[in-house]
Image (cartoon, one colour):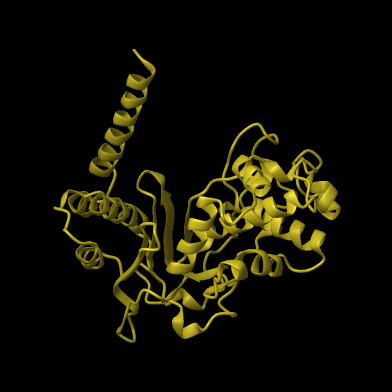
Length: 338
């Protein structure tokens, strides 16, 4: 069998497994939604999505050549019956890792950080409290190959708490694996990278990201906390079965879909980073991301084959709603493809 036939077979198997997973493992209503005829417009798809369990959806599309589109459906705030609108602010959760990995790449290029120096050398106070700290490098942390346990998976972590700093939950815990020997997504890696950047710079790492990434790109609707952002512009967040609005929890970065899209375009087309910074970034992290915190689910991807950025925000989590958001995203891509 030729190389390209093997590649085609792998793609076919992957698509088949995705379809089978939706048929067998998804709630029956999501399976039915997956099979529904796809509307001719993105507006039609978002209308259907909000009728099938998503309280609100925002979608930003950049098809290149400065052609952008914003769509919204459902509620910005259910209690106030305020309709969703495209320029609203949203908690982007782990999409923030793209910004922080970019900052690490820039600092490494400037010789402020050394990707091959260890966690213990930058934060010696933690050397006896994090397993293998003297072998874990910054590069391993950026790439989630450190073996440091994920604090959001630990007993005692509460997504409804007003903080995403759970470092104390992993101190003195055994490693998940030896440094560099495996891969496991861990939010602790980036929590520690934030501390490394702040300690090394001598000022808060967010100031560096604002000055070196946000301001040059004109990202005036990106904030590091709900306390920096106009609260009325933050989209409400909901969890199935709860009447609570989770917008008041401080869960990290807040941004508009347009700002995320502009950042993602600059990251992918090479304009955000210098040639040297791009070489470093390419060696350490990915160029697309998803995000999840209580009440908020997000997807931000660049589709190279059609030179298109698609950012999708949905403000409902719980009861497999993340699967529904993935189905909606796939259907939007089908619409764009047609």
